[in-house]
Structure formats: structure tokens, C-alpha cells
Length: 318
Ligand code: NCD
Image (cartoon, rainbow, N blue to C red; front, top):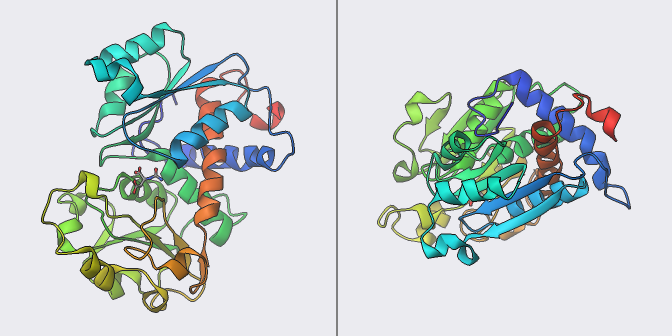
């Protein structure tokens, strides 16, 4: 692996290797001194052209917990606001001796473009509606913890329903690739205006019937309405969306009784997910905070695997 651009490009063995590495590294997060020397002297630059709380913070902490230096470029305060192109910004960051670039951009394909321009590893932290591979990986680790512990990340027999704004969701795409490669069945379920036109070319079952989508699902993954990427007129109103598509204690009863409820965040409580479900008071288990926690471990694993070429065995490094 030289870059992490999407889960489509990885095979099941690669995905399992990253997840196993993350599960190993996660132990560090429970220590009182959360620091190992693994990436000492290396520098990670996070370049975010879009808003982020969890993804940026967890990349930065992941780098720091492995003793790398982490520098964040907020686009509003960089020369991008003076008209500098993405290509020139990336080349500049390489010239100041960054060892890895983590990039989030509103254009699908921006991370691939970055990888073509740069010799150092590039990690895609979300590009437009295309992919968000570390989110897909942290979701897989969380599903394994709750439903398939100690199976070596074998998801055969599991049904994962992803509900909501699929057309604008890079998380939904990365999860389709990641989860199906591990053996799960993935269903996409949302209003017709929020389904992507290429869904029939992806390994996913698609339905516009919420009950059918959730029926007997092991996992219900709820997506935010990504209005910042949406053209006007796709939805009559948020209230109507919430009434017809909101995940709440009633709709969750269509899923398996021990359903695992996930959300990549940020959540819009009372729109796509009811507040009691968000708070873990609905049926099944709501694991949104576990997802965030696993996000740090997954990002440690990705940085380690891309930047530390010395040892393939993470256990030796702890
Ligand atoms: C997601 C994203 O940015 O794609 N957030 C995240 O990284 N956890 C989902 C979203 O914005 O709704």
C-alpha cells in the first residue's frame, strides 16, 4: 500500500490486515501515557478543504500518539484563500518535508489527483461523494467488535442496512466496498431522490421502502442529509423526511432485536435519527461513540502501515 485512496482498491486481505493492526494499536488508547515512539521524526500534514471534527482530530491524535509531528492546514488561513491551486499547495507541503498528506476535499477524485502529484503517501479523508476509506474501516472494526468478535473479520451472514442520503455519501460508498469484501450483504435504503444513479453498478441491494430495507438487518447505519452537497428541491421538507425516513424506536423494531445502530456523525438529532436512539435508549445497541473511538485506532494503523516501512509486525513496535 503506498496510498489509501478508497476501499474499492483494496482486497479483503488488505482490509483485514489494517483492521487487525488497528485492533492491536487500540490498546495504546487505554494507557495513561498514550504515546509510542513508532513514528518519531515523521511529519503528518492534514489538509482539510471541508469542515471536520472527528476525522481531523482523530488523524491528528493518531499521529501524536505514535510520536509523529502533526500539522494542520486550515484552508481558510492558507494561501488557498489567495488563489493557490491544489497542485501547488500539495507540492509546497512536500517541499517543506511532510512525510504524509491527509486530505479532505469537496471534489470527488481530489485524493487520487494528490497521489499523482506527490511521492509521499496520501490518505483520503473524504473526497466529495466518492470515498471516505478510514470511515469505512472504523465502521468495519466497530461491527466486528459487536457482532463478529474473534472471527478474523469474517462478516458472512451479516446484513447491513445503510439508510438516508446515499446520493451524497462517501461513507455509504466506502462501506459498500469494505463490508461486502468482508462477506456482508449491504442494503441501501432511501428516498428515490437521494439514491445515486450508479447504484445498480455497485455490489449493493437498493430499496426505497424503509421497512424492506431494515427488515431483519443486523446493523442499521444512519446517514445525515448532506445538504451542503445537495441541489435544491430533492426534499419537500426536513419534517417530512424525518416522519418518513427517520430512524426511531418504532422503525428499529423491523430490524433484528439485537440490532447495532451506527452513525458516522455529525448527527442531526430529530431529523435522520431520534434523540433517544442517538442516546442509546432505543432497541438494540447504539455504538456511535465506539465508532469515534475506533476511528483513532484505525487512523493510527493507516499512518503506521503507510509511513513505517521498517517492520511489518506492529506487535514488535509497541
Ligand atoms: C462524514 C463525512 O464527512 O463524509 N463525516 C465523517 O467523516 N464522520 C459524514 C457526513 O458528513 O455526514
